[in-house]
Length: 229
Image (cartoon, rainbow, N blue to C red; front, top):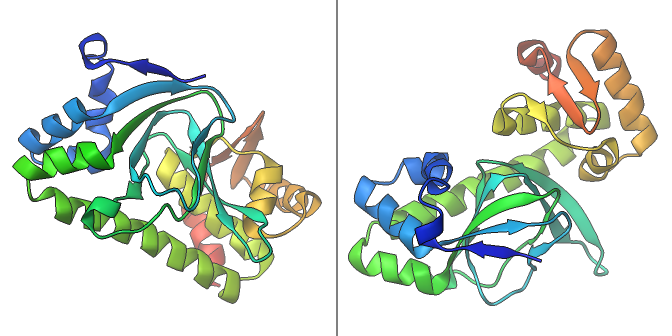
C-alpha cells in the first residue's frame, strides 16, 4: 500500500527530487512550483503506478528504487520493454495535447516516487508557461529511446542487443544495474539461458561483474567497441 508524504513532512526528502536531471534543468521558480505541486509516496515492490490506456496522465519520477515498464504487444500480451532506475522521469500530459498513457509502469522494488497529476501540471503551467516546452523535451527523450530500441531489434544480433541494453541501462544507473537475468532476457527477446551464457563470457573478459540481482558494467568503452565492429 502506498503512503503519501505531505509537503510539510518532506522538505529534506524533496532535495533528491530537485536533483533529478529533468527537475534540475528547470528554472528555480518553476522547479520549486513543481515540487510543491507534486506528491511523494513510498511504494512496495510490484505496485501498479499506471496502466497503458489510462486517461489520467501526468509525470512520474523515480527517486529511489526502480520501475518496470511494459508495452502491449498484439494479442494483448504485456512485454517488458524497460527498467527505469532512480533519477528517471517519464510521462506525458493529456492537458497539453497528449493522449492516454502509452505504457504500464509497475515498481520493480520498494521505491520512493514523485508524481505530478495533470491538474498539478496545469496549475504550475498557469504561472510558468515554459513548462510546456519542458514537457515536450521529456516526451521527445522517451520517443528517442523507443526509436533506439526498435533500431536495435532490427539491426543488432541478440548478443549485441544485450550489450547495447547494458550500456543504456548503465548510463542511466551510474554503472550498476539492478536487474535480473530473466528481465534482461525478456527485454531483448531471448532466453534466460542465452543471457546467462553471454554474461558469463563478458564477465570472464572483465567487461561486467555479476552480483545478486545486479550487473556492474566495468568497461563501457570496450563494450561500445564491440558494437562498432
